[in-house]
Image (cartoon, rainbow, N blue to C red; front, side, top):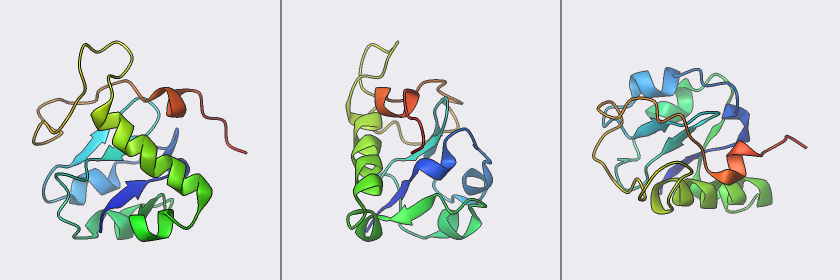
Length: 114
């Protein structure tokens, strides 16, 4: 099981989820945040804290075509080279030392809510 952050986080960036994450696995892009599934311990603290209900477990996301796109987008955020970067982010072992990354995947950067 893993958690993903869906479209309701775009342009919201409340950060309540980040404050309660015990393993620092939530990274801040430009328009939304992303959970690194390799670092997440599946505690669920972020899900209940999110004021816009943007965080969902992957088994729920797989059943919803839009959330499934965001699940793939989360994989891409860590596995693909983001605009303006020289290499994929990968698993840096915690978001705090990196600070806000200020960049999103192309999918999120160009996303317009339906």
